[in-house]
Image (tube, rainbow, N blue to C red; front, side, top):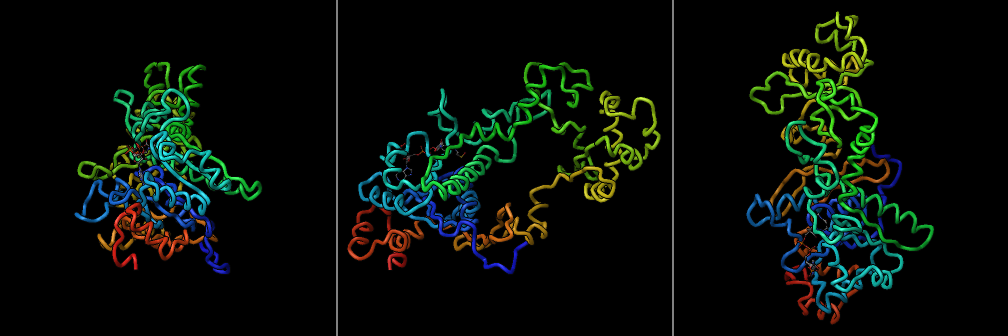
Length: 432
Ligand code: CAO
């Protein structure tokens, strides 16, 4: 909720970001900084731009949703950072900006001639934030994509059914998850700079970010030394544990038995399911709701340890009940009793939920090439820093604007840079 008594200043107003990111991980980070009010200057290779502009194209000729949904609230400058004039402009950008964010392959920035040492020389106050696949060690030079990180960070080995192969998640924890971690590092470094006056290097490895998100699975790895993990379904089923944290299907990670259960319509609707958690505190309520009140006092059913070996039977009975209700009816009936349940929402249902547009979690955005499209807005709500989601920039849309307004090029100097080809082909109207 916005505090209306305060002027609509944004938290990071006045902070300039040299956004040297591409694909998903880095752009996720700089997009959030843009939502918080930073001026994000996205540097893109002339004529090419971020590869995602032309990946998974749905509207021929237009920037893809892959790009537009990850690059809101940014300005785009085309710049060849490998030629001499391009390097000159990049040096000016480093002088002017507070933060440089990049997620190139390991060593790419050094090969351009911009090592951390050189960047600090140019601007000792700058914060340089990098995403790489792995931290220092044997894999440090590898290029890494989302699924590689999910696998290397321990997520895939602990996701899926016990008798099936490892699974990657729908949530992009490798890319977007790492971008979020980096974003926190950047604002923390900005905060420290307020006191020290110095910039610093912030790095996040995708493997590390995924592992951090899979922290509870490392908890379970250590617990294995003390015996089987009795909250895992396989314990109740008498299946022995191996040496590593197993895949737990849809068991809940918090030690309370939980499963995904069918709801009314499951035969035709792949998302007619609910999550159902059987907390000890609400066991009596569950018994009443599903029509098994005698289970409240029945021998062998009254305590959580006693129920562990009967979870298949218990959840089968609960599912008999959930199958008579829609997933939303299950929610409506269980919530008043504090029985934790959650409908399995499809992306279609989420896209059609007007309450999410009311909070800005979902937004409708206009784009000159593709018209209106849906996007996910800022998931972090701040009472004194309003977020307005603006469309992603066209390739090089702000090249001249950034050269002149941000870097102060004008007259012959500007002509020299533009004429050199280092900043791509300037569209006539933009150059005027
Ligand atoms: N001007 C001139 N050259 C530019 C440029 C510009 N504006 N922008 C990029 N380049 C160059 C780079 O300098 C690099 O050149 P060299 O290979 O000669 O050093 C080249 O373009 C390719 O950059 P890259 O290696 O980063 O890109 P890629 O497509 O080959 O690899 C990726 C992509 C994502 C695997 C790699 O960047 C990477 O591992 N990044 C770190 C981890 C990461 O963020 N992964 C998430 C990706 S999304 O799943």
